[in-house]
Image (cartoon, rainbow, N blue to C red):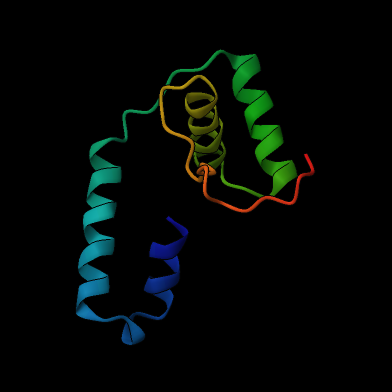
Length: 91
């Protein structure tokens, strides 16, 4: 969303390809606008945390859900250390 707003502010600098990608992303966001119904306490907590972190609430929810999916093995770890990587031996 931020990228779309930023590009709109500087549209003369955007390439046709960049605009095409942003418009497709915007269309997907609009198509999936149904949202999630949350308990009032949960919604308030997320709103307060997002404000505290200076982050839009949808981005915060995406981060929380993504981290939960990785932590519970529903998604792969994004940057897994392979056996041939060097490590310094500290945790």
